[in-house]
Image 1 (cartoon, one colour):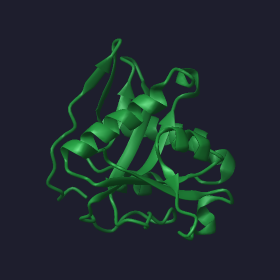
Image 2 (tube, one colour):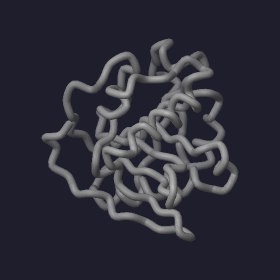
Image 3 (cartoon, rainbow, N blue to C red):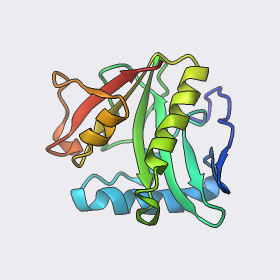
Image 4 (cartoon, rainbow, N blue to C red):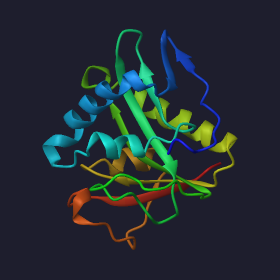
Length: 175
């Protein structure tokens, strides 16, 4: 997706920890976090697939000053659609819908509100870039978290088994 025209997301700082755009040296840490979070459920993606879902204007890392403490990958995607976990994206989509494909917080930083902060930062970016909705696929029993964040389920959207047995397509309007 290197041919995409975009604005870089501006860094946001909270107590010395900042949210910033993804840089090439971040990918080994992102891959480790992704594998640790999704590997036990068999949902790990290849590094190439992960990179293909990192739209530069809406994907970022949680930089704790010495390490990557989390990340969020989001890309424009048609409503009621979602990436195929078994292959990288072949092209960029033009859509009023922004798909939050992946969010992971390091286990040492969980329970401190970082997940909500990353989602809030994404919402701010989405609003500034005139997206109308944010969608996602909830996996691993996380639908409750997403409901608290304002997302509603769409049980009529069929998901492939590659997303796991409890996967739910969810979305919310950008307010």
